[in-house]
Image 1 (tube, one colour):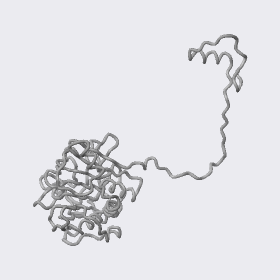
Image 2 (spheres, one colour; image 1 turned 30 degrees about the vertical axis):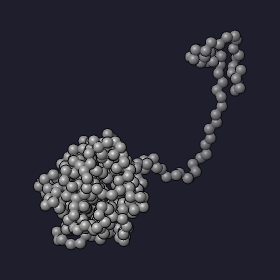
Image 3 (tube, rainbow, N blue to C red; image 1 turned 180 degrees about the vertical axis):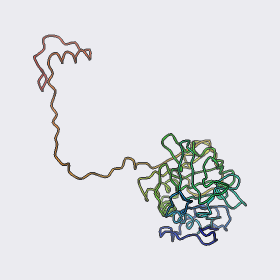
Amino acid sequence: MALLKDGAGTAPPGVSAAARALTSADPFATTGIAADRGANRYGVCSIEDFPPGITDLSYTHEDAGGFYNYVKQFTPPNFWYTDGGVLSWLYGEQYDDWQGTYGFDACVAEYHSGHGTMDGNGVFWMPMGGTWGGSAWASSADMRLGNEVARYLFFSTCLSLRIGDGNSPIRTWDAANLGLRMIFGFESTSVDSPNYGAYFFNKWNGNGHKFSKAWLDASWDIDHHQAPSAVACGATQAEAQDRLWNEGTFSTAAASKNWWWWTWYDAARSIREARLELPGAAQTARFAPRRLSPAQLGELAGHYGVRLGGGLPEAMGPHGV
């Protein structure tokens, strides 16, 4: 059920044109048979209307809608909560698999679109659409995901999967990870766009079904000045690496977190627009050999342990003695 601003159960909000008419491969691809709603494959959350004091967003419903509408072709997701329906109970251990259907550990692949930030201790925080249990925030420190159903987390938010400035996916997500296979997010801030979810599956269908590359490429199709990131876990280094580069269908099997391997795009910091205008005044630089006196030459030779014998000319010319 989608909970909208008025609390009524209704169809999900409209989605962008890029999210419509996607009719390609099933990313679950296990039986070839469409599963019924409640099959615990997908869960979706998105927030545009935040509590007072937090800037509202414009396109998170369309973003999440791109993901929702693609997978719905094959398996209707368990839920899509929006705005005031997105509360911290969805992410905390006590209720994250409520009734075996609802919450961020109730489905194999979970998608969240909204605000995000990270504190100085490497803890990821998300503002919710409302207050529950006295809190309007959820944090990675309070999450324990993967001990029930979740295997893939998509955080279409700022700063959800940091790499730089002393951070790492392990620092942020190790305690929360109890069986996750992959996490997708951002090392940097991310722009408010309606297209992340839809573009992800467009890229996935076009690249031979590689999840991590699809996430990174989709994000960069939206804006090069952001750093999308992805991490995979496995029992061995080889398993984690193979999962990161090659995993392309959703699996229900839990993964060991013995090894973590991550990737990200971050060339934006080196991107500068070409400067094509002429300077105000032309300037030139001329280079010529330095003329050394006998005393200077002797000092230089002594510095390098070179012994000069015989008399020295009065000066060194541009072509030597």
